[in-house]
Amino acid sequence: MTVSPTPVVLGVGEARSRLHDLTVIDVRTPGEYASGHVPGALNIPLDQVRRALPDLRHATERGDVLMVCASGNRSQAACELLAGEGIASATLAGGTTAWASEGNDLDRPAASATRAAWAMERQVRFTAGTLVLVGLALGLLVHPAFQILSAGVAGGLVLSALTNTCTMAVLLGKLPHNRPRTADLEAALAALRSR
Image (cartoon, rainbow, N blue to C red; front, side, top):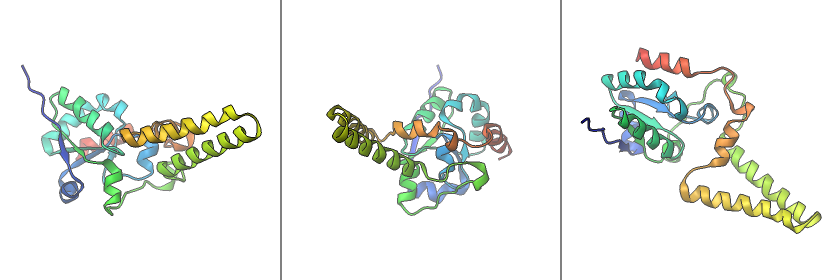
């Protein structure tokens, strides 16, 4: 019987001090990755991690692998998937949100790599605010039942804060303007192989 390795959680300070020794994998959507990522991170979205297992296994033979997402939830899921395959990895506590909040820089790909002009968090704030205003306006001008839209958005924001996830960001990440112009999984796997 094989024992699965237990995923390790690294704080921002420890990850920063070890960044030159780590292979960093960002498991967010390409649009989220393009809005800013830990320097040197390769983008392998969570739904593509299984496809990257051979290359990730090879990377762990050369050093530690750090999985990163926005908050730590998706990267933890990636670590658990890897652990189930006998691959040791770590996750960044608090994800890129914690990384940036502690004053660390986020890399952004060249403007030609993505069409998104706004960071995902800004897009979420704009969309949520717009939906609330539309719900209130329609509720005042057309029918009070339209205020349910505003209440639904408010409830979604509360749930997002409580679970530290954001369904709206995931949905917005699927929009064409948030996708990279070309698929980059093969490039990320090639870069992973060359490390």
